Image 1: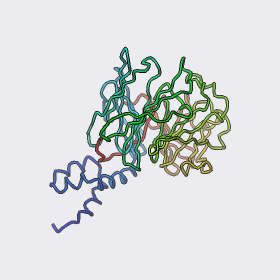
Image 2: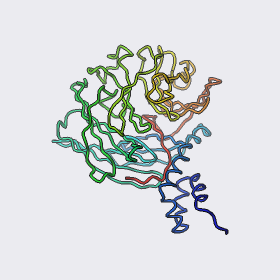
Image 3: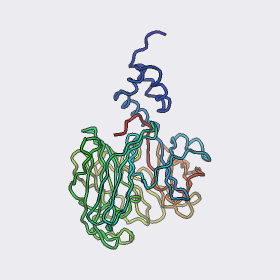
Image 4: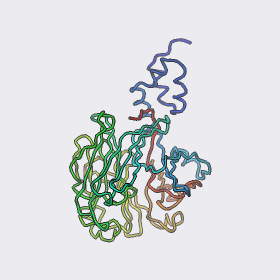
Length: 383
């Protein structure tokens, strides 16, 4: 064979899946070095981001948690999936976030004197795993637990874990919060206290309902600016002005608040939903219990850039989700194609906005879609 430039080899490798690339590390020492090069890792991540995956959680009868990874293309092509590979997690671990192909896992152990949280990182594509650090909470072990989120600080190329705790009694938030940040791989593995939340994230009692979203070096929560918000009484929210987005900049570790779209003018029947779709922050809600509405903030942080992407009549969705028509969220959007999922169902729906028709996607091994999240395959090393 003639000489093939290394740059050309790297360009070809960037289009391959991780499993194939890892096999090619055995070709030679030079290929092994090339595949481990940060430049190729970044190039591959950029290409892989164009082929997104959806991560679903499955809890078996013994209470164990497993993850299932699906390329979006597979969900679009095959409306009925009967066989899929389950990746079982170590007992007690919960998924708190995914970023650049890394998944952050946290376990919580309760002792008489304190809560102990253990953070770990996992790259499912490279099958690498690393335990990191423990957070011990001795202040009040019977108070509400810490919630966690995971993100990436582009300015310092550092992964960060955010842990927060809201003070409250009888599930009523007092408004006082404690927020800690861990810079992963800085050598100290030390949790630092930062400024408290200016407002309270929705679902402050249970991490599985908080729906924090990582986007461009920030973590974003849908929040409520009434300090006496009750988690168990969504009906206590009476005005749309109580809703706000709170954003934590992982670089400066400071907060900003953003208003929701001006067209959002009535408290929804069910709790609204914040997500990241097509690289933008999105906000969805029901409207007067008759329609499902999705908004997109086209320019992050700019209130005027909120744009309504679509509004779908409840009648068009009832045939797919008769019992929980508005317990919905969007997993994916591309042109006129939308994938909807339901928090309490094993079904998803591929919906065409132009002809207003949907096709049910059944995944037989999944009981329901609680907090599905986006994921991309990557060669990124665990911290």
